[in-house]
Image 1 (cartoon, rainbow, N blue to C red):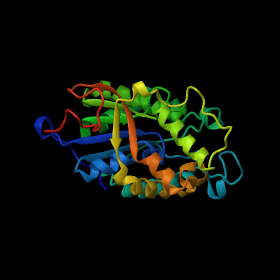
Image 2 (image 1 turned 180 degrees about the vertical axis):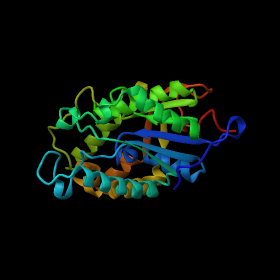
Image 3 (image 1 turned 60 degrees about the horizontal axis):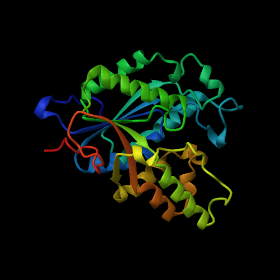
Image 4 (image 1 turned 90 degrees about the horizontal axis):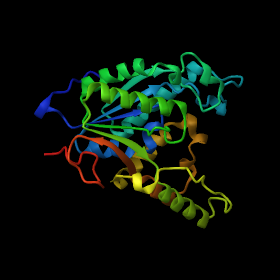
Length: 282
């Protein structure tokens, strides 16, 4: 794994996928499959992780603010887990911005002056823009405006990715990870029918992405095992990853396709596509 590559320009530009994520482990759920798939196809893959994950669980599940939680030790372990995950997904280039994890909405960590969510957008975006200049990715993937579920760091990652893309003008296509509502409902129906979810559990009406906004569905079924191994690499956060407790059939259902909303494109591509590089290949 290297972080020192320099991309070419024009016709010599190497096909490159860059995903901008907030924390160690975020790379797996929505983009682990496309990372593994495109890496296997020879596409250059770049993961930018914005924070070190300090607000994750410590040994024994100790939460931030509880006795025994050591931010520095948690960050060190989570970054080691991230590097293992990167190996399972075939990611060629890992870039760490090194910002402090802000924690979930309402956590004490939200107010820390060094928290990623409190960093001026233009400052963090400038650092990300430097990476875009280095790798010159045609495709950028990040979260939607709400960070997919409202996490402050996910929202900040969205903001800096959009700002850096606009600042550099480099990406040809910008995508948001999507969580299709209908697919989520189908999954919970399957879990209920299998006795793995309570009958009275209901998803919030505003959870996930409306089907009409999903433009791109990538079949990554050949890489489900890669995703599972990558997720298992984040063992310190295991109790926060319910997918690991699901039976194999449910895991395969959940992991076999990845979904995206194409926000911008400077190339001709179909309204509904199965390849994030549609319109960019020879």
